[in-house]
Length: 358
Image 1 (cartoon, rainbow, N blue to C red):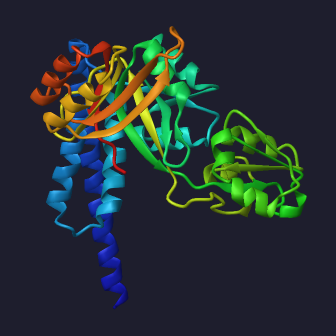
Image 2: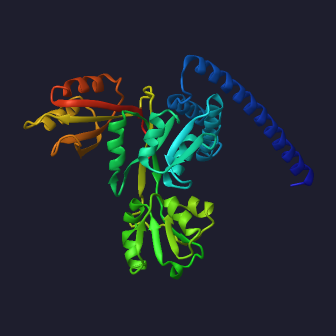
Image 3: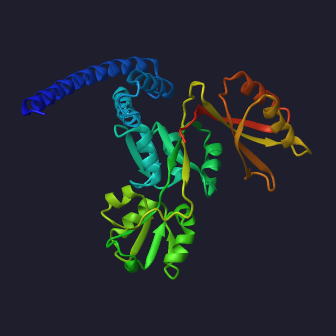
């Protein structure tokens, strides 16, 4: 290729970039006007249904020419930025920075949202309940270790709504200041992370004490100031706290994934691909739970999860948490909830929300 040809092609790219910037400026100005209208109507700028429609349309227009995964990332960030221009969204997560909760919040809400780290899961519920933030991101279950009991109990106690879900792949890495295994005299991490790496720790560091701390990022933060400490945390944590990786992917079972709930006070509109979460307790008589589950089966509703928790009010009584496919406004879901009232002491709708991408 001649030098002149290369120069002309680069000039064309510069011209296209100028057009893209001008169009982005126009897009954000329109987003501001939409935000003003929403503000007058008292609406929060968080519409997952609209965002999914935009992404679907963009991918259709693309016709596979531009790499789809990259296009999704680019447009997701554009959408999230325009959303926060309409109204600055504040989101609480289990901190400090670089926890898996932080990563999930960042991936879902984008870099333009104001992300607030807090110390405990209950603190997230407090922030949302007091309306100091719009939403919270809380872990609800892990594919290996199961449910997060604190979250299940809190969603009932605080009366907030589940507005969405995020699935985040989890990979655990051992890190310290030097990158050398022999320098580690103590391992720190969140209890779930330690539980997910038990076999590796027993095999590689059998005589090294392992202690729990509030979060994986807290462990990394500690390792940054103590050369004898090894932390099990994320790659983001290693980068943020300037640590060296001793061993990558030390989780005992690959394909580890954590499901997070987005909690808030607003109700989400149906998207056609939704999930509903319920809480209920059954009357103390034979066949009561069977009768409840039969209602779902007869109406063709697929259950994706059912979990029991001891009631804090009565010894040996249990509350059931249930996830099913569909939205509270779907006729079969609505009819089912009405019917199960006959067999339940209480039924609480926790939220209907778009299914997360697994």
